[in-house]
Amino acid sequence: MIPSVLTPEIAAIGIALGLMFSLVCYLTTNLSPGGMITPGWLALTLVEDLQRAAMVVGVTVLTYVAVLGLQKVVILYGKRLFSTVVLTGVIFQATLMIVLSIEFPLMYTNQTLGFIVPGLIAYQLVRQPKGATLLATGSVTLMAYVVLTAGILLGALPTV
Image 1: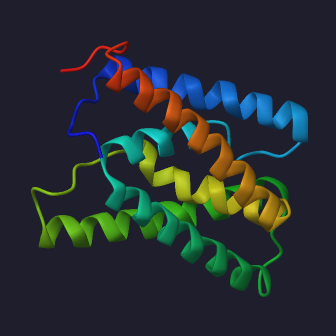
Image 2: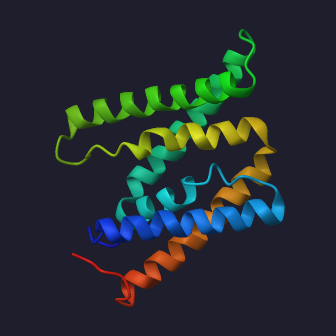
Image 3: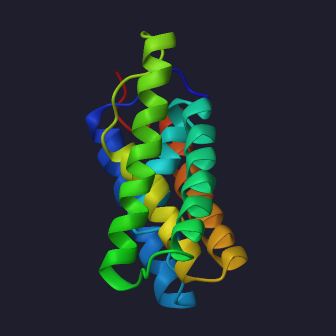
């Protein structure tokens, strides 16, 4: 983990890298890697805080399982499915962040984009084959992470 070197410029570059790699993935495989912004955000999170990335994975699994349960009692498709999955992810992520911020107030800061990422990944897991989605999300995130980390370590990106 690279100690807190993320500037707004690096964050924008990380999201842009994720978008670029996501678009290439989608155009070549017709698979969405957990949403277009997800891999870039995950790469930034991996650079900054590995624990937060692990939290996203846990909340994504919880969201996916909860939505599968909801689908057994509620008809969900299209925009209703998308809204339900993202809202469920936001509720779980917000709850976890609130609990952790009470226990460890200085450890966790508020990151708004991070609240929707688990829902975006879970939505794609519901819509696409699970293995292919996980592979696409992991691969695209890894590509963005490697390029971002290399740029930081080589001094090609502006740091604090």
